[in-house]
Image (cartoon, rainbow, N blue to C red; front, side):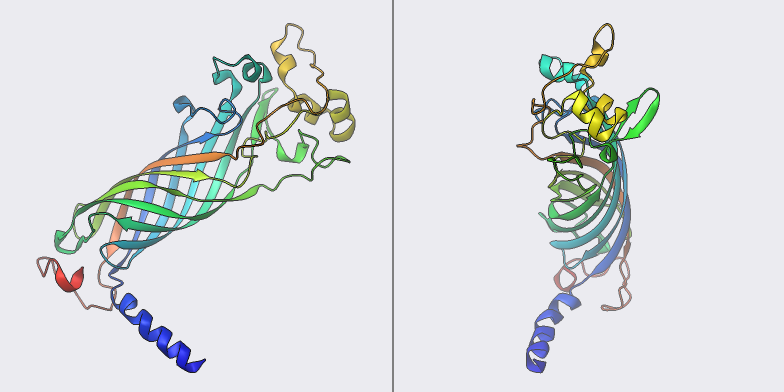
Length: 289
């Protein structure tokens, strides 16, 4: 075991030495989503774009490869009223919003190579992919109040013979593209677009089938029954529309996605103690690549 650890340390040494610098930054932009309340996962509605913000730390191993730890906040929303070409979806009359808190570990590949020191390689597009954990909490507006949907069990969750309440946490796979530009040795600007396919179909609280109004009323209460089927709100008298249990409500075959588009700004800590103090105007390539 001792020999193995020595060999491993020797193999990783070049990587550690080439770890050029640490970088910290912020992201400001917008977020959107595709799911059951975006025309059953078939459309992205730009007018539903909501704010997003984040913090990140990058470790630049060399001019090509970077690892990033990031924390993002994003709001996503959707409503059936956006749909113009599907009477089933419009009559369903559901809507939601959710704040998402995301923690991600991401790897980046700088296509042209990126080296801000001495502005040797001050510009590069990049590709990224990683893993993320996302906490969400779907809500809907009802009688002037924002109601949390997961505790209600609007599709019968928690009732005998139905699924347990879904978790308000999901894993996701962030991937996308970006560009970065070094204004100086220390300051970087960027633009990034990333998609997040998740492992949940409940970002919007909609996935499976209706539970009939009387059954949901008896099992999970008045608020669950009212928000499980909101078609009646579109009728003249506003009375609940009773559909048989098992009638299609969502599209359980497709998981939900969310997207973040943002402008980034970051600061480089170029002197990491491995390569000594650096001054602008030194070598622009070679051992610093």
